[in-house]
Amino acid sequence: MTTPQSGPTPDAAPAADPRPNLRKKWIIAIGATVAVVAVIGGVMAATGSFDSALNPRETTAKSECQNTVGDELKSPASAKFTDVTANDGGAYVLGDLPSRFDSVSNISVLVVTGKVDAENSYGTLLRNKFNCRAVFSGDDFVGTELRFIEAG
Image 1 (cartoon, one colour):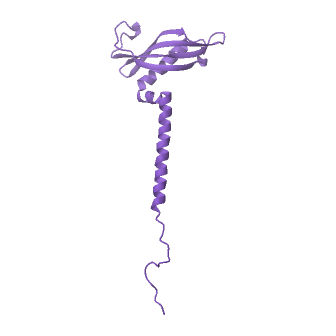
Image 2 (cartoon, one colour; image 1 turned 90 degrees about the horizontal axis):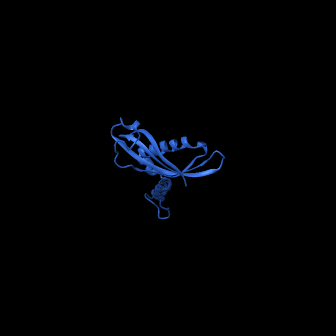
Image 3 (cartoon, one colour; image 1 turned 90 degrees about the vertical axis):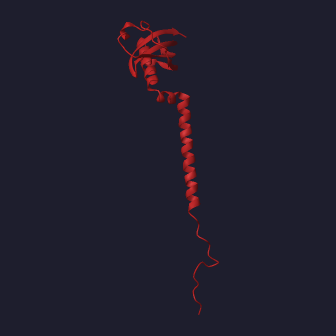
């Protein structure tokens, strides 16, 4: 009569360690996440969305100036804006802006420039350049002043 042996038998295969599979899954998940973040960041950088997301005043200035330009167009619905940028307008000098802004305190100005393609009265698509000043009191938007639109 033989007695059963305790412990592993020499013919038995060792049990597979589940950790390498789990580690591989984590590496793939982290790699995929990094790739998605890189793609989103690249798209935001290419479209300028990243900069605007960091500066709400700039976003407001661009939007309000585009609305002001649209108000001057014959066909605002046809407007397509390109190359729109917003930059610090420098120091404000009393009288530099229309008198409606004289009572505003803590004024700062962002100058918004760009191009707009829009239809004229005859339905012909024309490109115009624009320059607009967005006026802020602190972080609060106050108004715009359209300085010029010229055929470009």
